[in-house]
Length: 224
Image 1: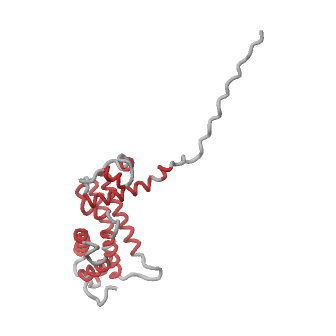
Image 2 (image 1 turned 30 degrees about the vertical axis):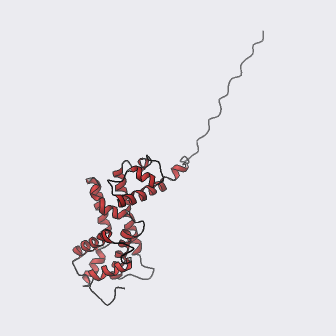
């Protein structure tokens, strides 16, 4: 009797893994944009409604996401609040640094530098869509102590850009107050504008800048 031998099964070849990092899905590639959308939505709502009155569901809806999506990017609403403030300070510092870069072959006088700093700061506070730093002014007390310390360092780094400008103006006899007090008073006055400024009723940002320059600097015939 002939014996029929079974043909051994051949296992399919194992697919080789592609070298390098695995390809990201569309959602994964969009993580950065989604995070920015969350930050922008949170900043807007925190400024308009306040931190305590804003829910993560509100933020997710404003960012066109599912209600649980914020927790994929941030551990808690508190973490999201700090991220808004941190983002605002980094953006403000970068804008100030970029604005102070004079065109090649020219330089800004200390008076011109202060005008730039004042106008950019006002735009950071009052310009359309700029909710990040105002949230910091309103809601810093909602942060944990560790976060407040970190935020204080970011604020110090930002204000450091003003010190050499104010020092040069003081040495030239143009600053009306000592450097340290002038820095505190100027920034305090500018920051308070978020409480009363109304773009529909108030002055323009250049006009506010003119007023600030006249308030804190001695006249030298022109502010240009």
